[in-house]
Length: 124
Image (cartoon, rainbow, N blue to C red; front, side, top):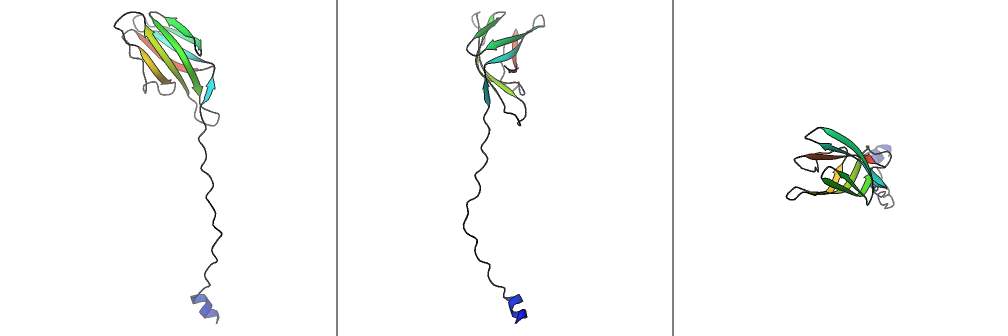
């Protein structure tokens, strides 16, 4: 009889239906109160670090830079900062910018200007 049981094992009892655990929720970027920016004048290689609070503007040469928001990745995630900037040149027929810039990936979204360069260094 033992041989018969080995060939025809009893069907396993079905496990009670369970749902898979919920997927981990992505951790959202955390807001900060301002941005640290680096502004560069390409003509004379003059670089300046700017500390700009959210909702405020900084002037660099002919451009005005408004920081709308600055966010950082939460602890435990790869370090990065992102700032939403609005950049306007006071001279006519010059390019402006409105959008997110990433500190770790500056080439993803760049302010393209013949004289000035602006990069996000971090948030405060």
